[in-house]
Length: 358
Image 1 (cartoon, rainbow, N blue to C red):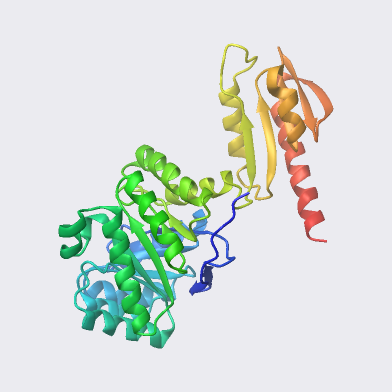
Image 2: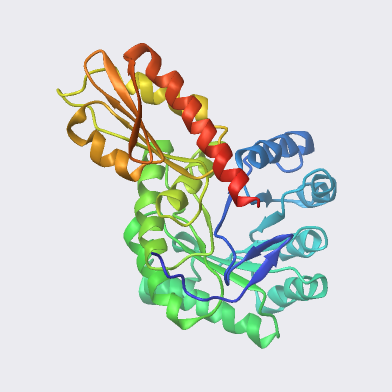
């Protein structure tokens, strides 16, 4: 059981972040935002992948001017990513649901205040996005690119926004490695009440980013730290959402679809287990009802796992068992097991859904 830190609740569009709100998963488009058609297409892909919100880069006035049309053509809350040019933050703030600014490069206090004034007027939040690679010069000179410097940067800018009577804030503290990322979030968490956006920045391609993010974000989430998150993967959209949702699901923080338990392949298995599991995953991916199902390749652990599963297969030599709630309901030839298993899973999902709706 994960006990989350109680944080201030804010809203990004229609999505609540912090407090008792579910942990949201977001991504970022990699199209040029001024290419409105391509950007809307990527946002739609993220919507259908299950994203809760989306961020877009705003590099120039063309990007900023495109935001209005993009916003009108998507239902996902829209976040503008602002670097260097505070005027773009002002333009974007008139349209989007949230701004992300990097305090290390946005400029003077006067410029930050101008951005804050727009957000205050429209009642939209700001994410203070601290990155280890773009810290303020005086902090980097004093502390280096360390968790201490990241936390000091965040605290300074939180205080500055608070002094402007602005508290619709979320915070991120990202580095490109696990250790600094986790340490920075852990240091800051007891010091402020604001919700945290979790992520490892510049995490790399799919394999490496998945490993880094699973370790870093998984560790923090187990500590009860985190209110929204992004899995940063080079050149990916849907995969970022898929991995993020999987981390939350495997930590028990969301209930979404099947939890498929399958044994590692070894010399005891009596069937082509990878093929069977792949077919089951593909044919049950539409099921959103949370169920535990077990697909085991031999009898050694199959019966034990089946006791905890809603539906299970226990393969034997040329045949196998279908088990439901720990009770054997059928013994069938191997060729019929997957079909019957999927049928029973769909029936159980329907039963649970009907029961929950009463």
